[in-house]
Image 1 (cartoon, rainbow, N blue to C red):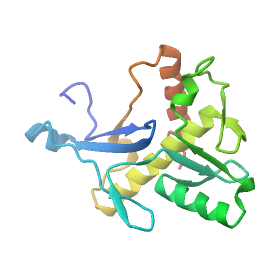
Image 2: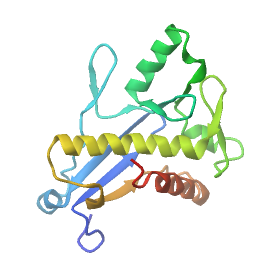
Image 3: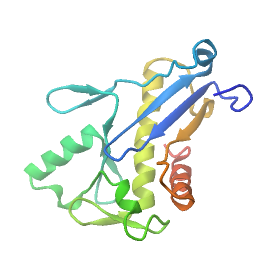
Amino acid sequence: MTSGICDSPVVAAIDIGTSYSGYAVQFYEDFKKDPLKIFSPQTWNGGKINLSSLKTPTCLLLNEKQEIEAFGFQAEDRYANLCIDKENDKYYFFRRFKMKLIEGEGLKRTSMIEDETGKKCLALNVFALSIKCLKIHLMEMLKKQETGVEEEDIFWVLTVPAIWNDAAKQFMREAAKKVKKSY
């Protein structure tokens, strides 16, 4: 972040990774003192062994109405319990879905994506809901830390793979726009 490019006091970068996802935050005041001071919270906890990680698995669990149930470690744990209880048939569980979308005919606004059991959802919604989960987590973390940062104070960055074409990058922009101020 350099002066003039961004007037926001905070920059937040969201990364939907192939296997793991997360985010990083940089405060402009910190940047002026040390441009390399970037905050990447270690607040992803998962599993019964109480693992703490900088990132969380790229997993999204949706209910039968295709609404968010859980994301990341929580999605894995919740889905595993649903499977054990044989109650998973009405749920959608997506994991490691990012690169599936550039296989075959490529990524399009109307692309469908299959969950682990073959049920299909609109890929744009799966990405938008995943971004939303990370955004909510980030905003909750900022609130807990009593930073006083509001959503409108943040310049948002969404990472995309360098190998993606312009259509795929536009797809990610559209997914992010679906999330904007939606929670």
